[in-house]
Image 1 (tube, rainbow, N blue to C red):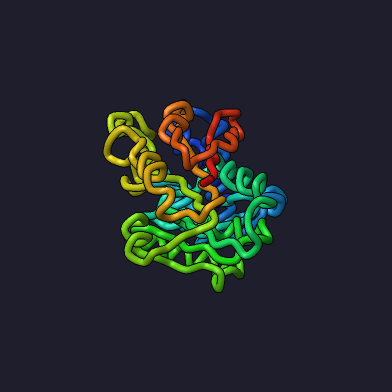
Image 2: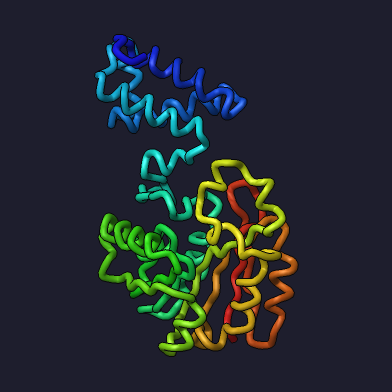
Length: 291
């Protein structure tokens, strides 16, 4: 389409045609094409549909074509647009950092269900903070959490956590720690009233079954390199070292992992307080309390 005057409608139809073989579904291809065009044109959906018969500016068309080309190569939409929504807020997203998923909103729901049991001025930890969605959202949604310490091995993830904390006005309540969560807690004698985590839980032998675009995300955020339970095992065994008495741990889990995770936490110091389902009605989050 280079050098040819086209309307928004024609550009959208062409992108849909190119994306259909990628998604093997015309409806999905259309939604993706629309999302890319909205981003390229910095416009709302309502404005787009008012302008469908108008000529698309050359700069917008060029950007839209380049973005569509990236999508045909299975680059995740969020890495192209640089944004994703989580719990009703827009977050910055960057290549090299795990992309937020709607499943993880269940972690927030779980914390909100126990917020009255948290001490006022609670100190929380986010193990594997990624883009900072859990830390920022907890600070915005709860009134009892005073500070969140964010841990990640990925420096880019911590920078993104800070960027999102600044974007949403909670940077003063966020503290970044680069390195292994367990080692840093042990070294600095850190203890918390709440730990939230969406650890890597995909089994190594299941990685080959993932969509191509998912494999564009950092491997360490997807799999523990083994059976998927290593972080839950460490949390269960080391709880007394990082949680204050009466503190909670709220963790996302993979499909059908609940029974085994619960068994890992079947120790005298832990009390199971509940499980939460995601938007697909799958058990997605487990909550335990240090007694």
